[in-house]
Image 1 (spheres, rainbow, N blue to C red):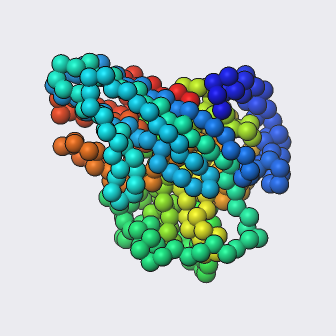
Image 2: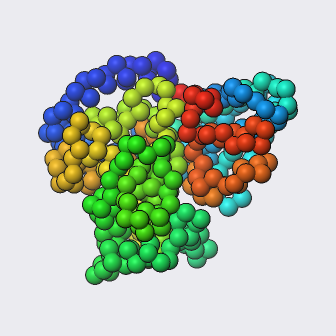
Image 3: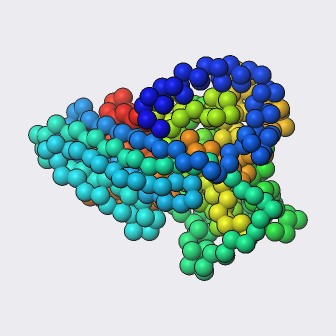
Length: 365
């Protein structure tokens, strides 16, 4: 999609947004699985540019930007180009997850400015539950995607909750569906949560505060799935364009995507392979699609989304990487729990990646 196409799509957005006032319009769109739900078939081309400027550099400054690193049946990561006048830039790959990181360092006295442009293609993703035959994961890969992370333990209260939620379920598909339903029915989106949340699922369960955003709610699904032996993973990225189904909550509603970060999730099911999952977006529709907080998942505006987002997702989104507990190259600071925001340090002080105005950075699609 070029800028002209994006503007043309954006011009049609008010009509789609107005249509979301009519539950029937959206319900029918997602309910007509053969023609309207996310379906593979057409690649869309995008270009995303991230511009970073450190407003108050103090000594050496380091900048780290996520670079698209996923190549799959739903995304083709293409070329990335960058400029960093006065700085030294290198492309680094995380050793465990393969996440690509543009690492830039500026000496003291420089005026740090970085621009990164990435081109890629995306496609809607859908599951055909009538077809099986995907190969099983090898033992090492299965172990990797059932392992605990710093913020996502797989024992204690996490496993206890997952065992209870899947009681009586025999297949991994049935267990995954039960966990998906549990997250949708027991958590809620909290608009006041900064960024996409933290993803500390043990703290959520122990406190009983099951609110948050995508990095919290989808991590809860992933952690519980792993705790009962089902491979699952978060996919960290950013929304790019309006939803084709009329939901403003599932859209990037302008070419400025600075605050449009969103993580999705996948679960590996026997016979089906990696399957798309996004209970957090169900919660977002419930909380933010209308002026009223919808608290019932069977509401006519919500039910089609809940059904569709177990097995499907829309190609109006870029996945950067699958990485957890990321050590930023050259940093003496702590690891980041996940890597989908620009990060920077100046004078050995980590800047607030959730404050793009003060940082300062801008992302556009």
